[in-house]
Length: 147
Length: 168
Image (cartoon, rainbow over all chains, first blue to last red; front, side, top):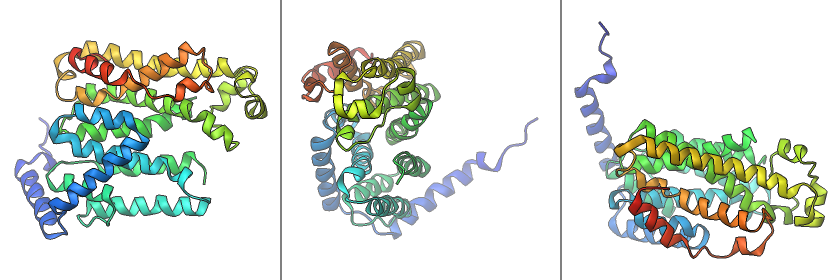
């Protein structure tokens, strides 16, 4: 007979979820006005640089639209680092900034960057996103463009 | 080519996994389909960026594919679409992307109702990729053709059709 794992324990999962909600409520919450302006910023960014994602956002279920917007805006920003900086050092700093921004966002204290704020609001609402996915994207782009 | 696929998986497929998490859908078959759609997306995006990067004298095409078709970097920069072997190399890479899309479509038909539920919406990212690859085929894999840079007016209709029929 298999021994039940500690991680299977429902009580432990509920406690974890409750502690995460408490952590977000005590950290700097993203206000409604900030979310509106962050959403508008991300939509404009996508409209300009990733029109397909901007259009397809309408097809995503309403609950997932902000996540999709934030993720695609994050992708546009990361992908444009090579085009928008003048030297390799600035590019590295930008990537490092994003690594730290993602860490702070998941810790509940997003920097004053609209994409990070939108992401923080999504996490505040209880959606569980995997932070290693973000770090994997950043890491892959850093390695592939050999700065 | 393998490292290009890994790059696409780690960048574009990961975006799809995150989108799926955003709608609280956790499903292994959908993740597999998203992996193939992501790989096709990454490869197609790289193909799209070839003319822009060549202006900056950077070549982003896989080295093994360039060697297979005897494509030289200097030829690509100086001669553009007339470079020897370039169209064959682009064809090879575009076929790989298309193979991933075909695999994703096959897996979607086999996956049944789980894949056609709320998670399907995220997979619509395959539609613009499919449209780009069709355009590339129509211009005979000339990556420098100006029609590839024009706005894709078919996207709203094709996306809606894919959404209604649950087919990418």
